[in-house]
Amino acid sequence: MKVLVVGSGGREHAILWKLKQSPRVTDLYCAPGNGGISEIARCVSVEATDIEGIVAFSKENNIDLVVVAPDDPLAAGMVDALEAEGIRAFGPRRNAALIEASKAFSKQLMRKYNIPTAEYEIFDDSEKAKEYVRSASYPLVVKADGLALGKGVIICNTAQEALDAVSSIMEDKKFGSAGQKVVIEEFMTGPEVSVLAFTDGKTLVPMVSSQDHKRVFDNDKGLNTGGMGTFSPSRHYTEEISKVCMDKIFKPTIEVMKKEGRPFKGVLYFGLMLTDKGPKVLEYNARFGDPETQVILPLLETDLLDIFEAVIDEKLDTINITWKNEAAVCVIMASGGYPEKYVKGYEISGLEKFENCKDIIVFHAGTKKESGKFYTNGGRVLGVTAIAPNLEMAREKAYKAVSDIAFKDAHFRRDIGIK
Ligand code: AMP
Ligand code: GLY
Image (tube, rainbow, N blue to C red; front, side, top):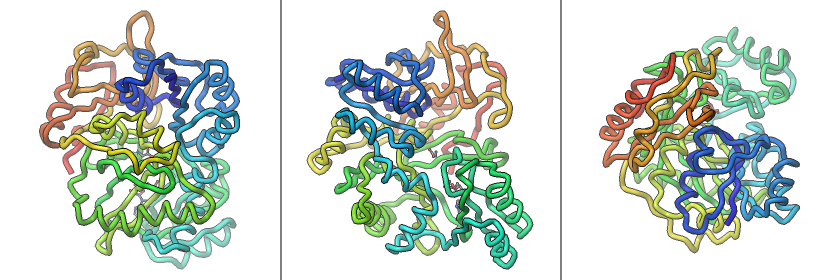
């Protein structure tokens, strides 16, 4: 089968790496891909958000399956456009991807159907939002409604901070049209866990749990990033909690999406907070997480192509999905300065050591390849994943590998996977 993966980061590298192991995959393509991805797939110069371009390429090249990985093309209806041309596509349709693309939609859905989440109010008028925050109790959380690269969430400790957050989102349009509405939410506390699940709209199969580290510096200091590292499984996500999540959150979510005429097929990502009143939903994503995927897929034993096809054909109940009883840690090596200004184009050394390694995999996030050499080409450059019998061993192995890889001004957290 000829498979095209849409996207260009570490998540897409991990999806392709796993698909490559499937005996039924004959040709792999990635649009637009990156330097590391070009080692295992043919990179095609079509942007991930170019719906017409992706449809045209898939038709011209007789692609059998397109995997749409990032949020933007899903929210814009890339899967619908591919299906309209008779091309098989993995990912939710536009009306189901709304569960991520509009926080106002997802909050209203959860309230309507009693799915546990933080209390909230929604505003489409900045004056009304400001009036509300003046008399609210603190801390509280102000969120832009739409997609904002994970940056549209502002935790406010005072009324002044909340007023500033409302102004920047709704009046200064810091996140563009994503800020036409805001969700103002109760502040919750507790460990955070991510649980991704495969679902065909009827059956839902959770993957192994994971946790990510969003802040740029050790001990969760500094600015938020796209993710500085992940590990799996979470130490907090017990068998007992997983049962509660299945009954109160996971199953109800897919049932109510179906009931609302928005059946969700693809990967549904549950961002959870384990509060003292039980697990609650922080957010939904309509796709694989990045860099969660870089620790989850290396632990998957089952053929990923089989799973993708079972989801599309609504036969997920017919396959048995199994996981390695091991742990994985992924350390992101980023460019100096990230998530603010950084320089691209530095040569990366030390990668060849891991070329044929089974338990250490270097996923490329922002690299390019020129004349046989790899260069940095983004804020997050590499995700170095190690697999081992337990988290402590995986951590040690991942950091040993990181110490063998170098580029100018490389920077990474040293506490990934500790808690
Ligand atoms: P989100 O994109 O909605 O997951 O928010 C990003 C991050 O902000 C989460 O991973 C949490 O750390 C934090 N956050 C979001 N909502 C809340 C909340 N209601 N209470 C406390 N922290 C929150
Ligand atoms: N790592 C969180 C996300 O992919 O949105």
